[in-house]
Amino acid sequence: MDIKRNVVNRLYSEISEPEVDLIILKDRQPFPVEVKSDLKKLALPKGLKSFLRGYPKVKVGFVFNTKLKGEIDFEGRRIHLLPFEEINHIEDYFF
Image (cartoon, helix red, strand yellow):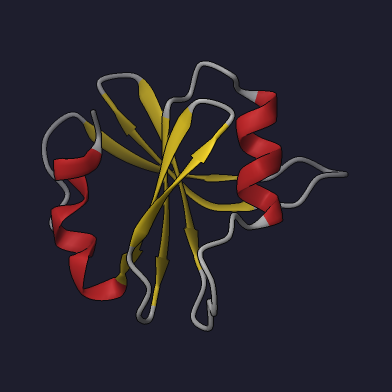
């Protein structure tokens, strides 16, 4: 993945909560990312749900997987489910 200017990658985990695989910070706004190799349906992973509930100002999140593409509305937030080959185009979905 080609990291552009003003984009920073971070890991996220709470002690008693499920983790999020990656947080991308762009212009001080967090974008949570989950990576699931064997996603069989358009569903939100537990770690991403937990993160979004803890950070209600986050409006966009991502789940990368082997084949599924779609969008889920979770409590008014857009979650993009994208195949791995679209990871280089993640910034197209930030806002």
